[in-house]
Image 1: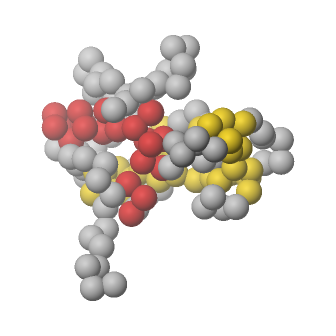
Image 2: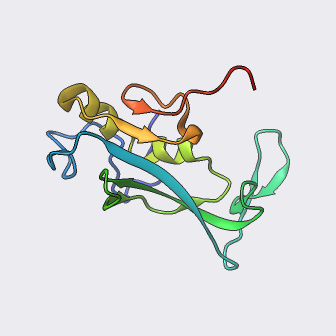
Length: 137
């Protein structure tokens, strides 16, 4: 489910009262992607799902301290929206759930506006189209 990181952080996670600002631009689809930005200034301990103490900002994907930022672009790559930074240990689909998936579901159901995303968003839901995995390997 969509949950804002804090009550003071603006988010698109709930369906808006009308189209989000990026929904009325006439595009046939949108592109959602996440990026880990490395930093040597981040560090915070937390408890993992397995009960071990881990560094919240350590990204296993990039094997360094990082922050995860999600971005929504038009088909030409022009940025329409970017999220607040999430810790590097947060996966792309979870960060998208925290910030934008609710609005993307609304845009798909009300405007027939699909979103293209990479395999990291597999299973994100209606209107978020990801590559089909090859079952053969």
